[in-house]
Amino acid sequence: MLLDLCPSPVLYPYYQQEGDTVIVVDTFRASATLCAAFASGASSVISVASIEEAKQYKSKGFLVGAERNARKCDFADFGNSPYDYTADKVSGKELVFTTTNGTQAIQAAKDCRHLFIGTFSNIDAVLEASLRLSERTVILCAGWENKINIEDTLFGGAFAEKLSEKGKLTIGSDSVRIALSLWQQSKNNLLEYLKESDHYARLIANGAASDAPYCLQMNTVSVVPTYNKQEDKLRIMS
Image (tube, rainbow, N blue to C red):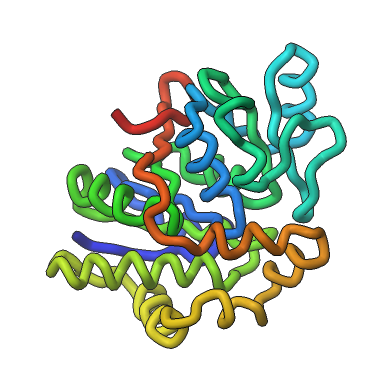
């Protein structure tokens, strides 16, 4: 499989090709949060880019998860922590979700052939889905306000390494080589490595330090949140 990595949503038009599968990754924390919500039984998620849209859904009675600048929005039922989305709160429910970066990346890639949500939590499941359905996969890093971050790039490196171990990796650009190099430097102590990163500092400043180790655990769930174009919603891949 040909693998490429787009390090920021603002660069996506330069990586976009017809027929691609795109894996949107927002390591800290939207991808892990979406995986947690679906693993807890959420039926679907409506991803929206703006706070205004989320408020409109809230006024109609929807359960809403909303975060900006690493903090839960005051009108929302949930923030952007995977710990918020427990089965007793979300099982069987349709949710609305907006975050600083992750939902913006989803919006950018909606026209691709297949759009998956991936992170360390579901890395093997999303890798197998990509191998089954795609000849070319682009990992779209959510970054931070269109800037490159380390943690999403590291997921790309881990994904590339797993593909390489299966003998399935064809490198699409230097972005993948950079991600692999970073991953090989950091994988033996990932959390310690990321403690110098910008977004880890934001988590600490906002009392969300416990989310970081959660988001870096491999294969805690087997769900693959997948964008359904007809419904304009995320659902679990069947």
